[in-house]
Image (tube, rainbow, N blue to C red; front, side):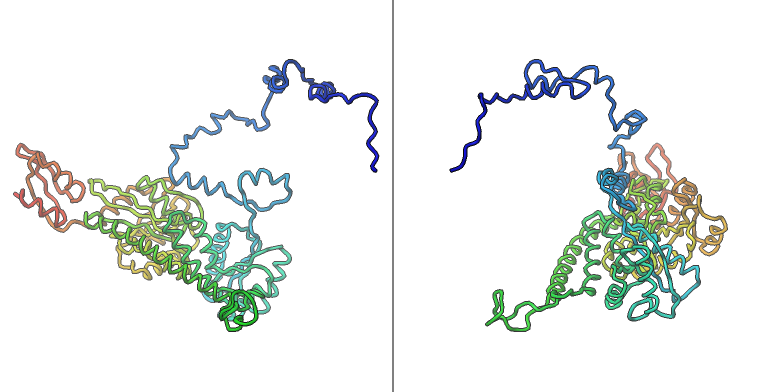
Length: 527
């Protein structure tokens, strides 16, 4: 038998929360008066404490002065930029207490990277510019560059890209700096990628994968995301790797899930299964992009049918194309001092000084050694450039090698069939560029204008040049329109080029040039 617990001499007192709270009176400097019901006591606070209370989050400035911007007044580009900066990255995460605010701001830890390049031709300055651009790409992707190394070789090593001795040196650098990623300035073959990772013992990424990662971060539209995913899958398909048991074959024959009878046969390896799934996804993405391309073609045909000229803005990444579009059309698109900040094309309708309507489109930026798969994936978007009537080729005048940027952009333009489009070189960032560099560029490119999208310098001259280069209507007309045909006068202002216009007692006397369709309707009123 178990012994019963000892009973106290008297009955146990009933427990009440009021008695327990009364027992704690005096433990704090400010005692709580327990009057009335318990709910009223909990809800009741001393009025004097409200006057002295000050929030720990109080700012030095009043709230209305701290943030008086109406969210509805922000442009779409400003909202996208704020959203992108909300996911900014920090250099290190040390302790949980210090990281509380970083978690609140959704900041991510930076990858620590070492850059590796192979210099096969050109000058030392060219090699340094290429490595500086790779560093900017790495920082845009969200990493911290610890070290940069490049090697002079006649050609990249077929096994390890940089040679056996340099691999050991880079491995020592990685161990000394604590880097977790190595980025190579070039496109690595699958065998080179595997050999480097096996020897250096950290993740190795080439230039193509780095650019694809940036595109994946910045693509916003459905078409842009599908294009980036297609390029990533095409890149990944050639670089699938098996690890240990993943290379073992799946059961073949009539097996339902085990060894024995029906479980013998060649079967299918895991890597083959992955490759088949990637091919299926690629086919699906191509079908979706074909449908999206049809929508884009319909819009393009509508502009052609209405004889609306189109101007395309192209150029090297971070040359200021979006800033120029905002300055010329008040488009309000995202502007950021970063590589490939905007990927999705933006088209805005604007008018010339005499009222003619034309469209201006911002396209994706180019870069040296732009991956061929990326060009193929974005071909439907880049066709906006090839089908345009005028091309504004934006060049960063403050860049160390603007001539190299021009050559890289023209190489891609030739690849997409846009090298025959009339071109105006727009030398941007005149406020930060060296005047000697601008003079050199203008001497090399006579058909050019100098502007600053940031300050507005040279914009009037740029607009005048654009208007003079727009395609002119082919048919001349000289008509006297009755006042009840104001619709034709309006169309003349929008679609035609007016030489002279005079209001007389009999009607509106107009002389100018128009397209064939409009000229046919005006023929009945010819003088």
